[in-house]
Amino acid sequence: MTVSELHAVATTGYAGISGGIMAASIRIGIDPSYLITACAMSAPAALAVSKILYPETEKTQSDYDTSAKVNPKRYHNVINAIAAGGLSAVPTVVNLLMSFIAALGIMESINAILSWVGGMVGYPSLNFGSISAWFFMPMTYLMGVEWDDCFLAAEMIGVKIVTNTLIGFKNLLVLADNRKLGVGPSLSRRSELITTYAMCGFSNVVSIGTTLGTLSSLAPSRAEELSSIAIRALIAGNAANFMTACIAGILYDDDIDGLMSNFDAMLNATNSSIPTNSSFGDLLSWNTTDAL
Image 1 (tube, rainbow, N blue to C red):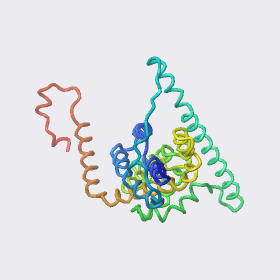
Image 2: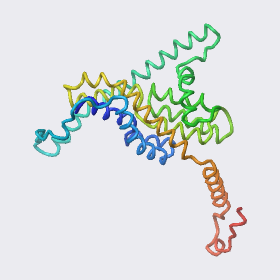
Image 3: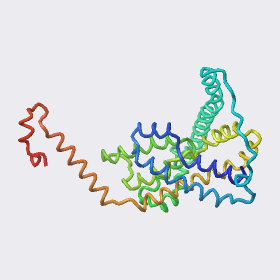
């Protein structure tokens, strides 16, 4: 691969999420339709942004080089193959865990320093999230987030970029619950959707170590080139996620969303009014207008 092609591979990795993270996000309460659609839309967006930030200047070998051959390893039996496969994944898993722990430690250290500095000027609640909120507010507004929600949305995006997607989603779910309960700070339904699309990707600081560890283990001779494009690919991955969020905001329809919310409320009211201990004849004579 050329360096531009390596950059494209890294960017598409940053712009999407894995099946495991998607399953974990759905489990904690993120709408699966948002995640699946975001991943599908981010793939072409990542390729476009990658080629803009790192245009192809070399002659690719994929068109004419037919000398590459695959030499698969031979194993004695299935058990031997399973054991070798598990051992080969250990460096990647350890790299992921250590990078995650290190990033969280750095994040807490930065927040502690900022809180100490802020306390000296009468603002002890100063942290990285509030600083990143001011930095990303213009971007969130351009993505279509309502201005009143821009600060909170930008703070979620900033936390996600420094830590990881799941932490950002958990913070977003707190705001979603506040909206449903009518208490505390919250985001509108439109702002929540746009923020979800903007955060649906591996484009965070923790993933830099994961990407370098994974790709370097596949091609040790390209480790130096991979490290030189890591930050640029991270920026490109975030840009792809932001493009996807822009399109989601354009296609979002408040009227349809309100109609679906009313329909869900009607179904819940209907289901709650159906007699639970009734015979089949009672249910046949039950009138749905009673529930409405």
